[in-house]
Length: 262
Image (cartoon, rainbow, N blue to C red):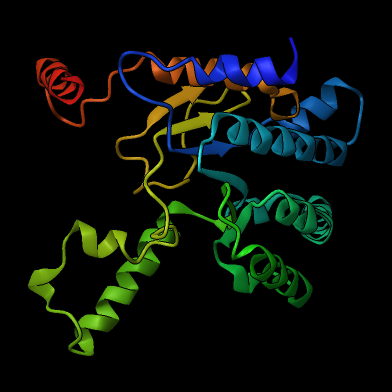
């Protein structure tokens, strides 16, 4: 099948339940296991995982999905062996240095979220440079969660609220869910519609804990370096079969759909 027909066929895969996801969030798990299966050092799996990132970005562009968030490095990953952490930091720096221009050329807007201050001055500089370069792009909004944790995100939002209440900028009785949501690191994004985790584990691992409240979850045994266009198509197909009710009944959703299509 040609690339043009492949894209056209995907554009037709919209189910009667609704449309394609607007925002996809991904835990890219299984790099180390993939490397072990292939008799390679763990860092080789992480390098191969970067190719899957490129595949994922292209797939979202093909489907015209506007938002993609990838969990690259959690706040818990510092507990890994120092040698591996150092290699991961080198890989992160190289990716920022080498891929930012390509993202810019493809109209991708890049944003990094997490406790950025823990990174080295070089990495912080590369983050700022990549974000500045791609800031004006209006294509895919690619967010990389690096040194990120969902509990940290909610905690720092609450700290901001406490500061605003103490300063008299906000009344305690006015604090609600929206107050917290507006102070999360991902406040500029819609909440994810689809969460994908590769590698066989079935948990969210402290990723976007607040934001995933109504997200459809998709787990696959496929290791991240082997996650390709076909695997992505299967995740999308699974999403399209689901009826998202957000607390309502199925009958209410059907009635809303009928009114919308009348």
